[in-house]
Amino acid sequence: MRRVMIVDDEKWIRRGLIQSISWNEWGLELVGEASDGAEGYEMALGKKPDLLFLDMRMPGLDGKQLLAMLSQEVPDLLTIVISGYSDFEYTKEAIRHKAFDYLLKPVKKEELAAVVESALLELDRREAEKLKVSRIHGEGWLRQLLLRKGDREEPFIPSTWQTGEYALFVGQSDTFEEYGDLACLLPAIHEQLNRKKPFLFGGRWEYELMTIQEGSREMILAITGAVLDPKDFCKLHATVQNALKQAESVSFSFGLSMGKPEVAMLEEAYNEARKALSGKPLEAVGVLLFAEKNGMHLSGNYPQDKEDSFLWVLQSGNIQDAEQEFERLFASFVSDSTTVGHLQWCADILLHAIEKQLQEKDVRIEEICGKNTLMYSELIHQRNDLSAVKKLFKEELLPVVLSFYSHSGEKQGEKVVGELKKWLESNYEQSFSLHQIASSYYLNPDYLSRTFKKLTGKNFVDYLTDIRMHKAKELMNKTKYKNYEVAQKVGYEDYRYFSQIFKRKVGMTIGEYRKVIGQADH
Image 1 (cartoon, rainbow, N blue to C red):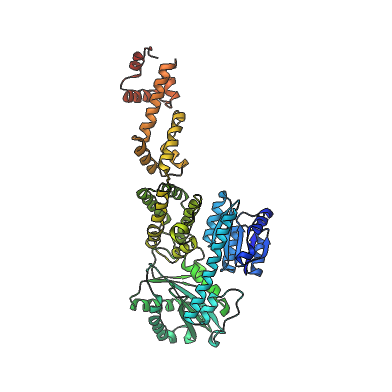
Image 2 (image 1 turned 90 degrees about the vertical axis):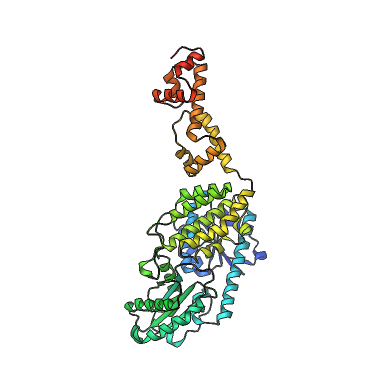
């Protein structure tokens, strides 16, 4: 039976979930429900659930704080976030901490069923993958230690690893290789480490070098010794880099955990080293990053305005415009200080924003692309360079999503321009700019300008001016307003400028026009 917990401060939401879940059919067991984050945290540590339903907005310890804590304490937990449409800022934090999926309130039974079934498939996939690793590589004690769940029995620890100090390196390639095989690099590294062993850490140390699983893009180097001199960590890193260079490998960077007093803490060290590695600047290669100095991996804000523009254009199905907006969006992800972790975080948010937009059309990424958001998120986190992350979106995701929108009958350009034309007919006297209007639609002004001209045959300023001149002529024909009053009523405070525009557009001065229609000059 899979163990389930529900954390939500609204009792009716908890009751609704409990009543909507087919417990026996799905092989699920409710092990606890909590009304706030603090209660949920203590319960999760004790119950060790497989699946957690979590509300993001709660008083006190809220959902994003709880999710961050549990991602460290119970890393195998699969979390389904429950949030309202207005809570997407919270949902971004959920994405950052690897929430599996999210449901929008009010929760619909069919959507709940789809998400739960997807979560159960993911749990089955993870277990099968770990079993496969175990069979292929044998029951290696370090691998068991790093991949174990909290309720698994302790693996056998070799006698040489039962006392001393411990630390762990995690290495990842700086650029992505589609068919790279790390296992073939390990013999060269072993040879160099064995040669250097007498000269590091006083010669009294042991190491384990491995990949975490078959096809993994991470190499792991765990070390133990009576005393691990921090100065030798850099020498050890240089030794590994020299071996990689001799093997003509692509460049690798490494994250290093803080020292640990117990071998059982190597699982914690593994997470620390990976987190340190996520703090690597995008342009850096072959570097060593220390956990205590690289705790944070976010190096900027998320460009929400550019995401809004991209998503709107994406719905139009226009390939060229979508590609241009995509390039602008990705360019805004990157600065001189951007880290790998920040790039991956931005890409994760974009991935889930595309998914959320598709859900409004009653479809999911998995249905049209063949992979769910968690699978794509894993692919994102295998890529540490900008070009590889962009390629994943441009070659796998965007073509399929664009095809869906182009065949779904969406004509967003026509819709917005039609709304704008109607609005101008009623609000022509107001002072505004195309940039302000574009912002109200979360659009790029250049894109709206091009779309407007394509659909009307005129640029925005000329179109608005024509409306104002038409309304001005109507007022002259049907009212006794003076010329300066007409100018003000159609949006011009400067009468002289109005008269110049009138002559250019109508082909005669205001006085000449009034004579034509039989009125004296006002």
